[in-house]
Structure formats: structure tokens, C-alpha cells
Length: 249
Picture 1 (tube, rainbow, N blue to C red):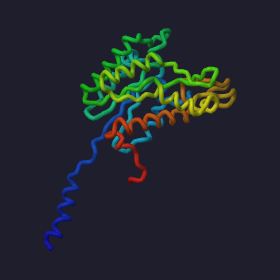
Picture 2: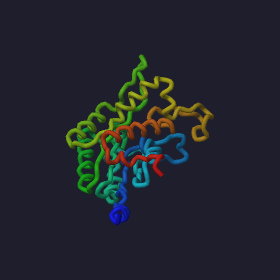
Picture 3: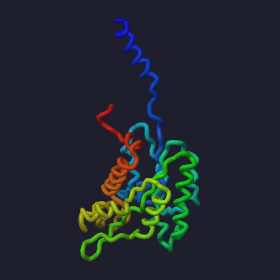
Picture 4: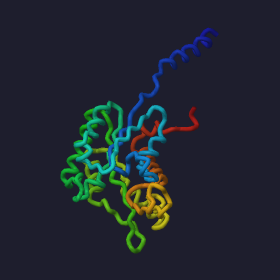
């Protein structure tokens, strides 16, 4: 009888010493397709914006992605340094570049060799801080050929990301291929809804209209973020366990 009375007390005492899950940070390092947008840019959204709402209270998403940045300029401007200052053991660093690296006329342009070297360095430095690097290919632009088939625009630089992920045994989220599949599934016209396609007078931020096949609308950003989340469930089960569950109060 005494044992039956004592056992619940033991279990309650043991439960009191169970520590809550350690809080972790997810850093987003990338370009305009991932970044937080100024009000003047709406309805343009980076996919990092809806991404923050997927997580429970043990996760803090820190989005340092910036418009126009490459693997070179992101470091040169001190953005990578900020991540390395804050990154601690158990954190995650999502690295998505290529859009600006691959354009030779931009100040942020990075040669193929330097692009690969930069990615390798980012991976190694993240691991030295005890963090988990996650490489992401540049997310596909919307481009169709005359037959209605999606055409890749990041073939060379996206493959470099894949090669580095294989070389360094790093988790890879292939937003180039996955986004192409999404656009193809939606088709030439419907896929415009994923991007900033506006008629003149449709939005006060773009009085003359806009046709942008690189930057996402709110819908497009959410769809790309959902692709990233789906990949996380497979690639990073420990992080996936922290995905917000509305059924748990």
C-alpha cells in the first residue's frame, strides 16, 4: 500500500527534473528570394518570411538574407560574421546563394571556383561553431520555353551547390529542381500567381505594373517555404520535431 502511494510521488519528482528541449536558432543566409521585404516592396515576399511561422517556441528564426547578396558580398559586408558570432552548438545555418553569384555584370558576381570555395568555407565554419549547415540551391526562376516546358536558369551554380553538399556530406534542399516541378505542375499562366505579376494600377507600390519572374508573391513565398519544410521533415528529423503542432497546447 505504501509503495502504491510513494510511486506517484517518485514519478512526479522525476518529471520535475526533465529539462525542456534546448532552444535552437535557425539562421537564414541568402539573397532576395529568401529575405525580409520592406513595405515598399509588397506584395513581394522572400520565402524566409512565412518560414518563421512553422516552428514552436523552442526555435528562433534569424533571417539575415539580403537583396542582391552573393556568397562573396554576404561575407564582405559582415552578414556572415554576424551569424558566426551568434551561432552556437545545436543551431542550424541555411545557406542559399547563386542568383547574384552567377551574374557576371553584378558587383556581387562570383566565379564558379570562388563560389564553390565560399560554400565549402561556410560549411566548415558553421561546423566549427557546433552548428549544422544546410545547403540550398538557388530557387528556380519562372521560365518556360515555347512548348510550355520549364527551363532551368541556374544549371551551373545549382550543380555546384549539389556537388559541395555531396563533397561535404551536408544536407541539401534542392529548391531549383523542386520549384521547377511546382511551376510545371501549375502551368504557364497559373504559375504567374507565385510571382510579382501586377497590372498597372493593381497595387500602389507598382503603379505602372510589374512582371517579375524571380521574386515571389505572398503565395509563392509560402509555397517555396512549404517545399523547404517538407525537405526538413526528411533530412533533419531532430529539427522537424520542433515544427509547430497546433494540437499541443
